[in-house]
Length: 348
Ligand SMILES: [Zn+2]
Image (tube, rainbow, N blue to C red; front, side, top):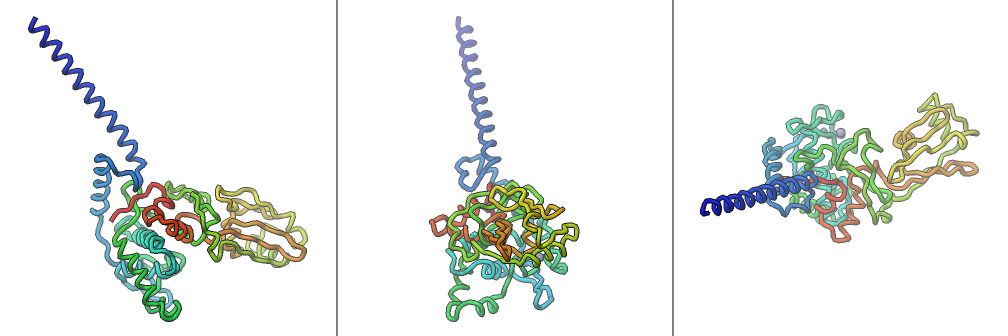
């Protein structure tokens, strides 16, 4: 009798253990599932924290970079600059100082990430225009200016105040970079103004990059280059096209019938355009004609062709005017970066 009782007791105990183990396994699977899709706002659970801790160890195990080599094109020489000082010069050149502090902070993190993505010890590739330095100081990489140069271009009396504001944004994000799946983000692209939506990376560049997805980007109508127009004569336009693409064979009398927009991206930019006997991407058409963006409409007037563009820049990643609009709505730089670089995490 007593033995039977013990056996039954043991059985219940074993069932309880099995149930407990199952619970742990199922919970772990669920948590790991969330962890794969982690964002800055999901860190309440210990296992996720451990994942992030691991990722931090992985990132901090990389060599510490405190200086960066920049090719100064005007002087035709390479300068080694303290990383944070370089970032201050980049933010000062790349974003209006009048912008909200959180937009400037978001820019600082994006620019720092971009700089470190050109350091070979971190798996990056040197800029091909930089003569062996990490980056060049032009729009090819990101524009960098020294404090003296930048202050000359700001309204008199505001220079020191503006520089200090940018410095505050850089110091406030010191050492912070964007990471994705525990690695440094290699393509933290940004641009001036979107058309209301950013672009999927593969619709502008060749690669499908998971964190560079098309997202809404409102409040940009006040950007000075949100809308712009360029006017070409019929002769002028056909000449430019034929000079760049001799196979196109367009004529000034027929050009209206020879140009057809084939398709557009999710954000509305021209993906492919047929011109005479050739087809080119909207980006190539944009470069050929020096348009502000590849989000355009072509209007054939009586004596000229008007090309109306919306937005300014390639449209991939963070919109700077969109970042400022978000900051004006009270969003902080982490929320801004999270919005434009999907699924990324800020690491030091
Ligand atoms: Zn470059």
